[in-house]
Image 1: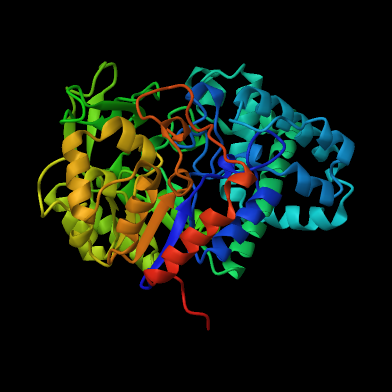
Image 2: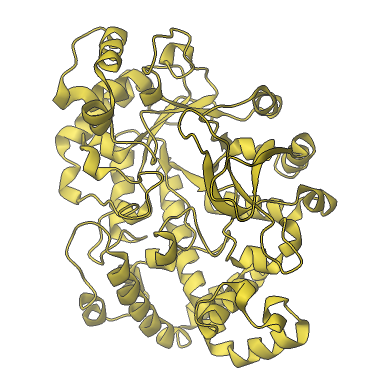
Length: 502
């Protein structure tokens, strides 16, 4: 991240597709072409891990830290592989609009079943599949078994399974693998198809000079294959239930703090094992992406743990981690570690010292800069440094227009107008904010696609603290107008963010 560049944030699910949800197919490739035409260097996506209705379809709550969401598989590309017919895919088409996850799950899984039934006869695919299963066995075998067992045990959490399965007794696992062999094989095929399509899309991006910025949630979901296979890495009791849950303490955003519900890591055990689980996780993500943003980075230095059973995060406590030792091992394994640290909110000096010591880039969000009269505010662009990633807002923020219309009070608007040096015009406010970030010294700047399109609040991706209606926003191809393309491309050029051609 040593050259000036800019990019857009748009998750795969938000892309155009006739199948009810964005996928790795033609809509994704056309979006890459748009990025290329406007001189962008980066495409940021949210975690690609499997989502579930039980967790509000959030990409930050998954049954696996490694697997890819099979809902993102493109039927269009399966037709090209002769795994689906045009007629079969045609029956699964849906009207354009927000993602209806219940309908999409039913429709996509039906298509994947059909594709899987033809898979064994495709010799060329089988060769790649065998190699994939061998290379990814470290996570793939247990993941496929976990999915099969969830279905067998009526979707109950793994700690409520029969004890032999819960505790992974070798004889019982061998018996279950044999009994569920067909379902296990099917899930492996699904993963192969998802990863294959994604890696081909990534290659296309890179050929166009666009790097993909992925996202790694720091914590994992309790009811996940990761906790089931490695319970010793988490603070669990003798019955393998969480002793503590992750969150953040009370602050000016919340009087009771935030209680996330994820189990916290047992860093003593992680250290004893040489942090191998985290090293494998990072290695796999660096295969999927060119750069990675690590969510809630401060949790790698000190984390807030709340005793299980508490209803709020008030009665938690801070616990230290072996941060320097951990990141020393990480940087030894990956000398050119392309990490962006999500360091928003109240960040203590020890976290800043770790970031500085290892040279990790942090984040700046322009929307947070005008809440008070403070010329040295860290989110005002004149205070940015080169080694940072700057946004108008993130996937958790309102859109630029939504912020201006619904959240920014009169004092904030006045400060913004004074800062940019002219009166504010509603229909131009998104370009005003984008331009303000573009002209900063930050090496990397990224804008949610909603901001580039100038969309109001109802188009935001996520409203933190709410459980419904999130992660379903999508755009339509006709919204990427020539005017939008010309304005973004010109701004990218004027502020020196178009990479020089070799």
